[in-house]
Image 1 (cartoon, rainbow, N blue to C red):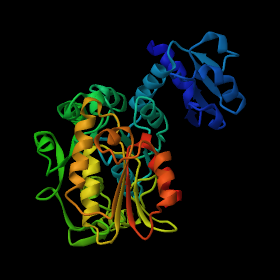
Image 2 (cartoon, rainbow, N blue to C red):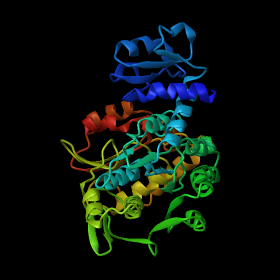
Image 3 (tube, rainbow, N blue to C red):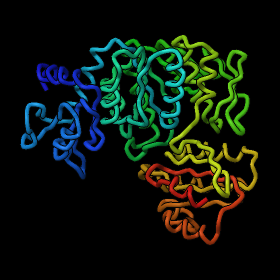
Image 4 (tube, rainbow, N blue to C red):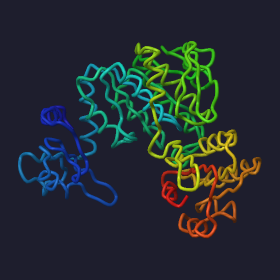
Length: 421
């Protein structure tokens, strides 16, 4: 798209209050982008979006152009991405981008809670972190914001670089490098290379990195402007306890979080470092962390009718699954039960890593262990092929008076069994 046309569309965008890609949920005076997918064509819903109150519809099929409020372009997604990049270039707002294999959204929410205690900020809503979600996030940044926090997700090499060039961050943070999306990245080395694209972008733009001092891969970037966090670092955070919740010490102030598992130590420490960089007071940092309650199936403690459940079913990969199990083992509650679902997007590594989880569990004593999914079924014959089979089983063999960990990939949707516990 030539700059003249992009500039014209941007003028229309500045007249709108929001952007939308769902004709059912458009807001009044918004700009609707008629995206296409494998099973839908947004152009077909542009008229409905217009009737529902949007001011302009961006379409890429001429037959759907009803009047001058329907803006015809060659490619709607590409236009939305270019418009987002153009919007950021017009703003004078420092942008922090973060990525990683595990803990991205939790870290993003902690950072946002801390920064918003002092500043008017914009941040990624939910996990809008891909080629569609990031431009929506960028186009939703309030020009009056002092800071913006943008989460970047990826499942193949080159994606973080593409998103970074769109968001143009001045600051970069990587939570960790784990065994996630191996099908797309090809290997653990591919995961590392893909995530480091964020650090490489920030390095080239003379920005600043937040570095986990316990991660040798990140420490290798200490020649870049940075602030380190963790042990023996610029921002020294000490882990005091992780049972039942993570408890930390920062500069003599004890912080009692509502997050479970030692793996959340890094997420909290990273958020503290960001707060310090932007001048948030220690008391506000403490209050923000202690007020944060995890939701959306992420490390939630839920009291059901018959059990206490640790619901961590938003997503799973071998790294996060192993960390969750080891943390669960350390818990002091009795009658521990595991309900584990398949880990998806592992490609040729699927059997190896599902087998490693089965082997890991054999090292510990649990009241009961239940595996759900095709991949676990290939490794462990006592597994359940799907949720339906599992629910049929527990109707006659109920789980009661137990402490239950539920962990699995998003596609398995293990939160749906919560009502039966």
